[in-house]
Length: 422
Image 1 (tube, helix red, strand yellow):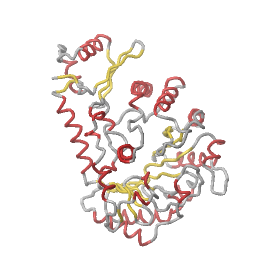
Image 2 (image 1 turned 90 degrees about the vertical axis):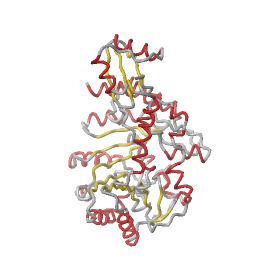
Image 3 (image 1 turned 90 degrees about the horizontal axis):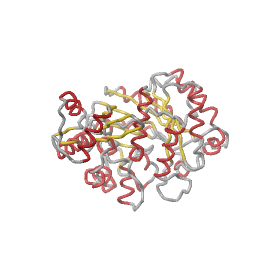
Image 4 (image 1 turned 135 degrees about the vertical axis):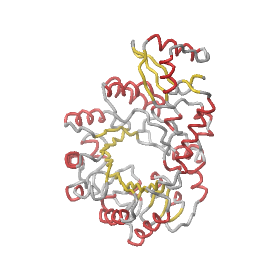
């Protein structure tokens, strides 16, 4: 037996902790146990634990393992099994690229205001039927603003339900159209989760996420979030707050506002604006992002319920059964590519028009071939980071950091989890 390389020991004040990413387990230790384990790991000694109860616990936590090669093989097997499982069909459907907002950083403003036709709707249903091994269908409604094509969403949902598959859906929306007319149908649409984007407090948000007419949107979005929260308590609500240098202070104000309103169950999550083309000086780099999260957690007492590491869930884009469908029946592998003609890999009728791109997403830039990933203690819960970013880095000469924020903030994130548990 040996000590797992996926273990992380740390001390905070007079308290001692042990985390293992292979089992995703986290425990507080007494000082003597901490010293015993840390000394043996530091000296690269063989496992020498005389206390049978402690030894049994450490084996269960996978802090003690048979050998290093088996650990890595287990992680890789689980990832490959998920990549090639065909029991789930995951579709991100863009019923339109049109949007009622005029956000300066969003791709839709440069694209046709195209809506899905009846013909494409039928092609979507035929596409699903061809995946005969699928037992579950999961749909994310995306856009554009998908609620502008609400009738298409309802029509497709009814046809999905008639297929007899286990079905659930989520929606990514700007939140402006989440009024009573829409919300009363969310249950019929099997909506289990909603993500709404806010760009800061009212002044900043209304400047950056106004209607195409120039009118403000903040107050109505907050009103709609309250309404969904009250009327649909079983729907998971996530509010994504885009962060860059121009609105760094706004997240904390929003957090306090949500706490005051007692929006229990709503996840408020900071999301750092990406600078894929390296042109935006307002974007926070990786180091700045880490410092920002540290300040929120340690200095301001912000508590994030979603920041505890998750068992390896490599983005499902690696699976052939994960498809992004555009309004004209075009297929993409990642929703970041929607609207970009050079990122279309095929069509609903089965044609593959960009095989190299498809194979990049499915098999290239693999973290299990990446020396840095193979040696990282977070591989079991990271899965190599975002495939979209890995492809940007490896094939498009983009100097992008593919590692998740948790890598630079592991101790802080784990202590945040302790706060939640209390």
